[in-house]
Image (cartoon, rainbow, N blue to C red; front, side, top):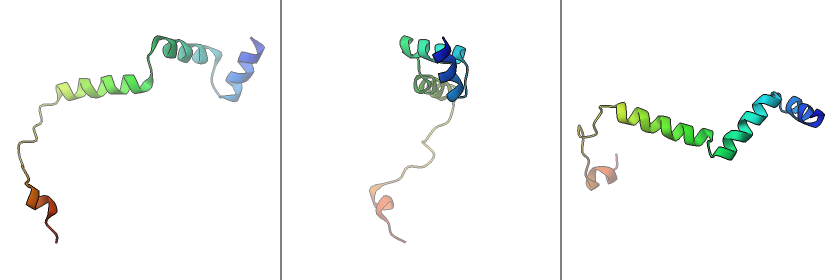
Amino acid sequence: MLRARRRAEILETSVNQLVREYLEQLAGISESNEDALEFERLSNLAHGTSRVWNFNREELHERW
């Protein structure tokens, strides 16, 4: 337990936080998964549309 406390101190966190993060990893839960779920949730709430402006190939390659 002393080694865990030292490790937590080096990482500027608590042993509880280290255990929590380990269990999340073990369960397959990560920040990236949480971020993806949050993005999906927000996307489902959005009522926006991209139908306002359609571009064509010539416009994409038009030089100024």
